[in-house]
Length: 323
Ligand code: NDP
Image (cartoon, rainbow, N blue to C red; front, top):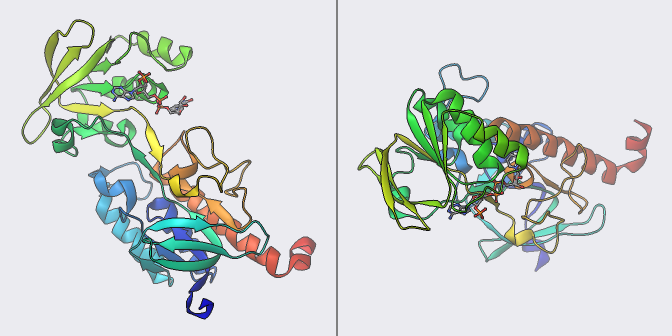
């Protein structure tokens, strides 16, 4: 049986900037990487329009095109990119051990090293009007899309550190920012709360939720509801930012990899190493603070270098020690 199971030197799970950058480096190091794309080939950037903050694109580039180019760059050096989703894992505890990964609930593959770049997904409210207008003024990333609303009126939902940080960021670019907080207080740190409260063009509405996002093709306004009084109010806005948290895509690794209380994989110190030898994590799956394409790409590069060094070490430990 086992001779039918494919075995790779480096298996990469996920096809966002982290996964493809890991693939470029791993392929150039002759690790013959195989990428399984996951459910959303290309990752979160395929759901954005223009990417203007990735270095090297002075005119900007649209997200899906950038991801196709990253894939082509990885393939140019021999990466084998496959459509498929990891649905179960069995990681070895032994240095040099073989890891098993089930793809699409049906096929098992083996790998000497695994790089996890399965990303995180922004949480949305789930309102039909919000879903319909995603890409038409509804965004989950102020740093990515805020610039498109320069000088305009926007709103942001959430009361955590992300919402507070993004509201301050938007306030510098936009004319006004209405911040909707569903409780009578914010969850953000005191310092962040003080910061948003002292910015004159941020209007914080407590006990307030969205009743409906208004507009046919693009966002034109918001109907808000006070969840204490039931009172509704409409405001005109062109951009709506949802900042109610992210969920790392780590369910299948639970019980095997060390994670923080919100499910982000722990990679202590300045490396991408997890608690399992030969298993590395890069990109948003291990980073809840920065979450940028360029930082994800950076840690993808680190993961490939860490995998290369790990393989050299388990193959000839003496040589690595001497060097
Ligand atoms: P959090 O989970 O901390 O906050 C989410 C916010 O969204 C809460 O105010 C929550 O309200 C609200 N919310 C959740 N669901 C809904 C909903 N359906 N409708 C309306 N509001 C909703 O997520 P963050 O992304 O803000 O932060 C994640 C982690 O990252 C935190 O630990 C944070 O401290 C950290 N972080 C740190 C930063 C820094 O230090 N610079 C920057 C950004 C994040 P409620 O309170 O009512 O549940």
